[in-house]
Length: 296
Ligand code: SF4
Ligand code: SF4
Image 1: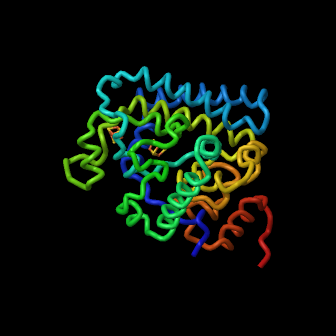
Image 2: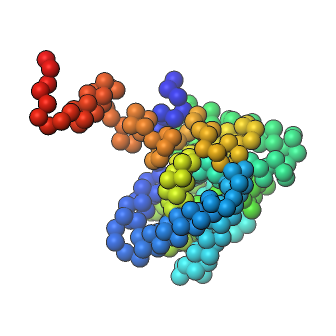
């Protein structure tokens, strides 16, 4: 079995389409870029004045405020049908989060749950991670493994410190969300999302990822269940991450876009089909001066 980091996870086609949409000129791209730029500058400023152990919580609070502000200003806000207890999206989506978000969630769980509650949560997360590890990407999507932080009462157990992306997703139709969850065909591939809100939240997240990795911290995205489990199982995870230690090496990661994960042999969506020796030869060719003579 290859390490977790080398296993692909099914990518949500609706997400892929939206990401493509953010690459085209238009209002959504403008929103995305504005949010990313604001957030990047904000993180760079914050990094200068905060201790390593407080980095994650300070940066998370700042980013969450920016997400809340932007999603509140969406012109589609009045159409939203989301509400407390509605959780189809938490059960059909694969959520990716940054290590920073995972350590904030883990600290919240340490402070607000009993040891028994944490143990129960950890075993739920372990089960989901094991299933994701074993299942093919298509099977994992079919199983609706969802988020282990969704409580039995249908509420998010970490709502006040939920991931940034969770705070930016809204739909104008609960019925469509339910139908997608139940695999009923209502003619929709994805819910009618509030796309301006989503573009803004993704921009905040994108700017954050960029600023963190430029500061030497792990800004990659990891599958939520595996990242939270790792943060819970690692004593002092916030401090270690804040010092640039590679804490999340064994987590599921489908988007290794920055150090320390970004190594060509670990990339999954553009993984080279040739073995590593071909890569080495190609790198050597690139390094060789144009007029050098090749030895036979
Ligand atoms: S996105 Fe859909 S499933 Fe999620 S809370 Fe909103 S209406 Fe409910
Ligand atoms: S963290 Fe909370 S809001 Fe986000 S997917 Fe999980 S249960 Fe839903």
